[in-house]
Image 1 (cartoon, protein in one colour):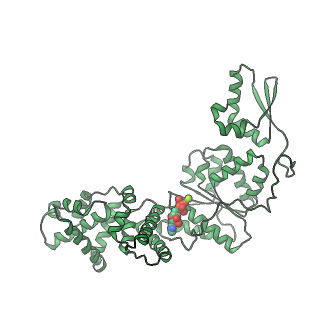
Image 2 (image 1 turned 45 degrees about the horizontal axis):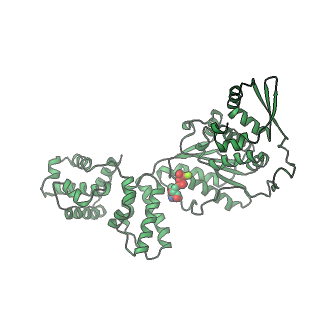
Length: 436
Ligand code: ADP
Ligand code: MG
């Protein structure tokens, strides 16, 4: 058995079984709790039966009998260490990040609904949507919003019992409770809260006994009108291995998604985080163009964006250098490479030529007429912003021009974006098309 299920599982589930014997083809075991008996029966029953047959012992059925009914609070002191009662016991909440507040959360189109729903839940009052189910890709702010809810509820009512826990921790505690025969405390604890938040619930998909326990906790709280907030990386309907009854329960409340960030939101987040960082690192100076550059180039995930910013500021304060575009490109080369867009210079040239009704040959020609030169500069600017090609490489792609010409083009378009509304709009439109 140990060889087939592994040492840990064996120690947790099989080792505690006491074999009582076989009678009328029924093998009997004593287990510490009936809960555990059910679990072993469901998960390892077939394997145990199989082993009996390998040993040529005729067994048709297994029976697990709980040694003592542990679902009563009074327990013999000899068997388990003294545990404080639930009410005295600290909530086993996972730690909350102090920075993950509503104040620190930048709202934009992609997350405004999730933010509004989170706010509503945090305001307390009559429970309006239960559960609140937040979902979205990695690094889009699910955990941030959940912590913000917890902070806010706690601030409004310090006595409120708010329990925030990752689904993984939930499972871990559940398994520990089984192992140390302390299901009573576990159940009481989770049923005694005012607000339960479970983060990354997709983790328990396929983990059947944890799902079972989660389902019961969930129902008990909903029945008592306690608020539940859940997050996942996908919509309830898309989580494979999630029991149907849990899925439909999750869909009963409000399901909102956090969309991938857009450029404006990323820029907003960068401004807000840069401000906070610079307050802590006086003397660091940041060219605002760098933030635009980062918002353009790192679109995957806010965590990566933030990491890039922190690295730049740390670097700048260590070596005492101003944060410029060049410095950022050098210092973040690895991050930029890995979040590189698929946009190529060829594509940029084609889109720009289309947009201005030019032929490609004109765009790449030596002609200096404004009607050709300006679109060419726009294309160079976009090549610098959207690809990680070096200035000389860009120059070469534009009919073998010198890198100083590219520098000039980038500068010129940056200036014009501020003074010429039409250029600003063209650049923005092209960028959107290329990034789509
Ligand atoms: P998730 O749980 O969705 O994977 P997190 O909540 O952990 O993502 O967010 C990752 C990082 O990005 C955190 O540092 C968080 O503060 C930050 N973040 C995400 N969205 C926002 C936002 N709208 N405003 C400010 N910070 C954000
Ligand atoms: Mg998270």
